[in-house]
Length: 371
Image (cartoon, rainbow, N blue to C red; front, top):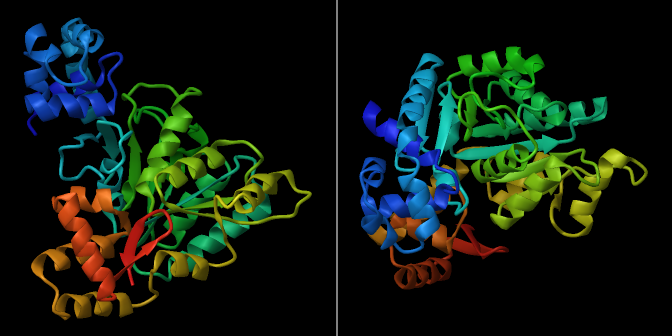
């Protein structure tokens, strides 16, 4: 996109009362943010689900274009990219969620955003030395698998130790921020953030404008992005209530596999994890092998050979297209339809054929994986 287009995208994203879903609805009918800006009341009011309130909000926000231009210049001055859901670089996993932001800010190369395997590691900010040890141990073992990257929130406790362990074991790691990327919060984590920005696979992202400060509502919103970017979420130490449990709940709503590290029943920092397991909101995590089993991941190239075998096993072009998508990460049928552009009735039939051939299987949560 050109600089002008990006400025209009920033303008659209900044209109009061308009979220990501509404922005996408407007773009689907008017094709660009610039066209939204230039639209009349008559043009806007006839768009489905765009009522009088949103129409007037758009028309009354045209004076904000200059603010959007300054925001763009600030992002450029701070080596920050602006991606909308129409950009090829926009994270594929994030794009699949209905409540995904329309626009994100990205700092650093952040190649892990669209990597083949992303694991979120979250937990208490008041984590103990045991929690730090477990986190490092998990990352160390995950580093033995091909293509693994770590997602977390750069917060105190488990988050920052997950990022640091990822850097130590040469994994890509993405920090999802609840503030703008002009600054790092908390400031104590600036050194780690700098190391992430210097790493090719790692980086920082946020949905918030460059100068935004962190506040209470931004943290749960940040947690949904962590959950969306991950293929699976591991909770290490969590109290009865807290941000890590919010991330786990959102991940469950996205039909992601959640794991929790159990702890002593007398430990308040284990209560959240133990409850996740107790109420069947998470698998019990005892080793990385638990993830391999549930996610159908492999420690070696066997899975790649399996994929090659499937492609040669008398599969049609469409069946090969479907298996390639599922190979990258397990998905629900609606998500597969979005990525393959195959109509749902036809896709359901194709998936049934692939099940009968033993190529794919249907897991809990209506998730399709390779068999």
